[in-house]
Amino acid sequence: MLLAVDVGNTNTVLGVFRDADLIANWRLTTARDQTVDEYGILTRDLFTIAKLDPHEIRGVIISSVVPPLNSTLEGMAERYFHTKALFVEPGVRTGMPVHYDNPQEVGADRIVNSIAAFAKYGGPCIVVDFGTAINFDVVSERGEYLGGALAPGIGISAEALFARAARLSRVEIRDPGKIIGTNTVHSMQAGLFYGFTDLVDGILDRIKKVMGKDTRVIATGGQASLIAQASRHIQQVDEFLTLEGLRIIWERNQPSRHVAPEKKPVSGPIRAGGKSARKRES
Image (cartoon, rainbow, N blue to C red; front, side, top):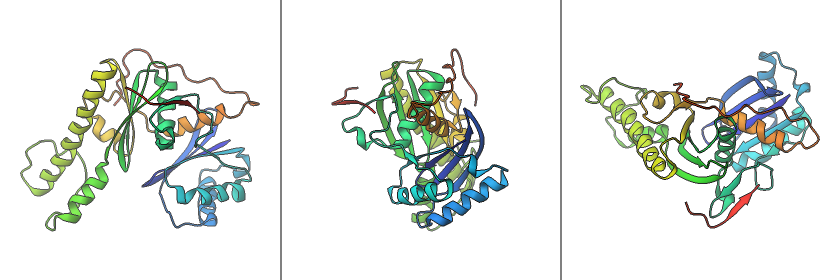
């Protein structure tokens, strides 16, 4: 079995694969001050609840945008799973050329998502990842990472509003059903929900003018399902896109192992819910 770990600024997602099948997954709050043993004991407890044997883990792959946690997670993999973790970083074989002025600036999660999207849905495609930030990542028809756009996430934008406006209290972020709110709660919900829906669709409008109107759009992350229901462009919500990408990268870095066949890119409708200075293939 393979343990895949995606460490984001807000949440950490863990998944266990048996070959190409995701058999368990968990979403946790990213805790920067936890120790090796605290992460290890928590992870082993999750395995116990899911009735999985930690001794069956043969590999650990980690994508992290929180560098201070890397050594902790590396120690956890060695102490509790007796294996050396593979981190998605420069030098790891991904099979995807990166067109970026400085490829090392691209977050590991952005590359992982792009690899999974191209493997599952083909190209050209755009991945919209709703996390602490909203990432827009663009992949060419040939499977090249072209770059993208970054915007503030819904959660941190809402928190800024609540923190700076003394008379506004926290509300659930959801569709209020109307754009003209008739009370404070509905007014804030309208601004957050429709505001970010239009932000997402506005950026996708501009990217599609460059990439073509038939470019597929796949969403993942915490608020993906929420925004997808009102978006004009999001065609597919894939909750486990990042974990799938980690599995694919793990397989591509195991030359002596049999690699399970990837799913063929989806064809036809899938509605369910530039210029570069350098080029590198990692």
